[in-house]
Image (cartoon, rainbow, N blue to C red; front, side):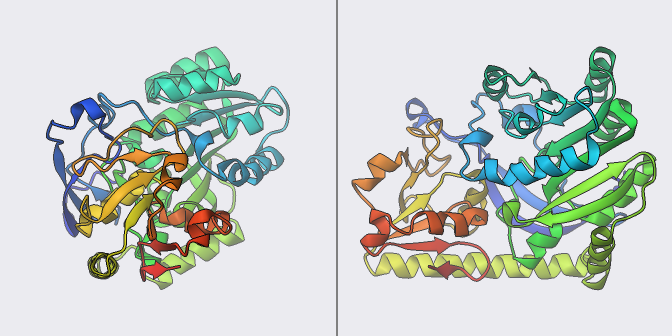
Length: 403
Ligand SMILES: [Zn+2]
């Protein structure tokens, strides 16, 4: 973000497969590639990031992009107040244009399309096709400055440009922000929702660290970065998504900082969030948490009990790899997304099955692979056969709770 070239190592997490590269049955004999996962921090601006990055073309090569937003439980409910906030504050009339970068199957734009003109941008063809089917115009390309210019020519300038959970996937943030600047009307807003380094540190959450995520953001680094392009972060809030996501609002017309933004800036300063010493402490906590998880799992296996994975979510695989938990510990993953069923996890080749199939061989423990959804999952399962049989959940981050 600052073009700095000096980095300090925050965490060396070893070698990991690409988490979204689920393996088809016919490819089980092949060896899956693994890549180092080393987190570093820029000495100049404080951005926590992967330095040896794997390009998106490689990450998504030969893989059907398996994540459909609308398949995620509760995501519609999460986006409803978000969409309402955008409408209330930033959209004045139905001719206003909203462009969403990384729009997936159009889950958010679907909630905005009645009050505005909407356009999605998402390079994954299969999710773009799903969006088109539900009437959300979607460009199946990577967002870039060039594409932003083309959109502006055809659709005009945007009142809002939104990017949810996609900014961390971009290697060239300069190109992104130049594109946004080009596309955004003078009174428009750029809304970003991304991972929050503050939440990761607070909760010892390392489930978001995998090759798809190049950066881990704070308010401070974004304020510095936006200023270089004449943009101002004027509002920000930490949302409960992903165990604490950062939603930021940027403008061109220099609006004053909201109270909640000022509070966040103060909190980052008070906790020295962007200091390298904080990163060192974070790494220590992560290593201890991974070790503890392995101990808990070993104890369960020694007692002759079975464990299965709940949700084959990408964000759980880093935890398992760091804790060296694999096929000898986990019998299968259950996942509600039909797009993942019948596939196998990379390297360990643990099968992913449907809930109906899992009901026939329920484990003693489910390890929740998307720890950010733990509360929702546990509530949803309250009356399930699994619970009636005495099944327990392992929440694999932080203090490693058995619930
Ligand atoms: Zn930097």
